[in-house]
Length: 173
Image (cartoon, rainbow, N blue to C red; front, side, top):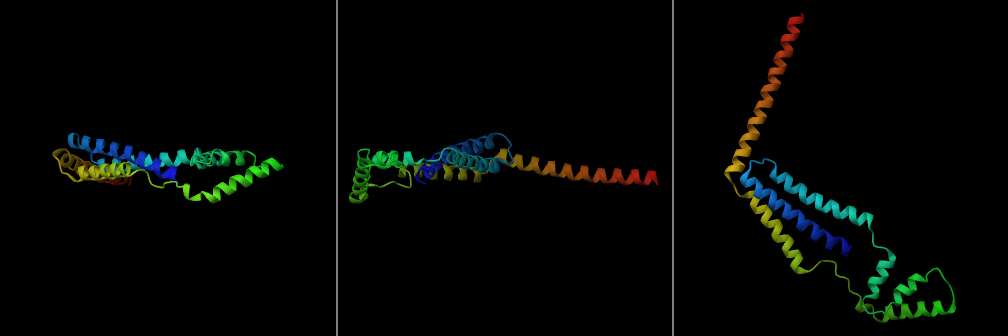
């Protein structure tokens, strides 16, 4: 879970950066769907993290290595590697690993959230992207006008097609 959240913050930061780029382009070029494209950039960034996490799940061996990194001197990974084996020496090793885990469980602390700097950067990028989407510009106004003109043209085309169909039906009668 901690790995997912860390990767999500990173990917969403990239998605927010892409959104800022899209919003900046919308200041120069009439781009009516800039806000939707920005949202899609964020959704694709999060979808990519989800797919990576689904494909490359954390294995038990990786988890054991991570726990060992808290100062257990490879006791946990050794116990995991010999999980399917039996013997007196292996039993002593497992008991030692469990004893160390119980005695020093307060050492194990896996942070769920990434650093405050990374989280603040993500929030700053998201706010900046949102701010850019709300600032009016001549290109955005032009994009709105072009979009409404295209809608009117589509409506007129539909009306003309209906009239042509009606005329063809009258001609056949």
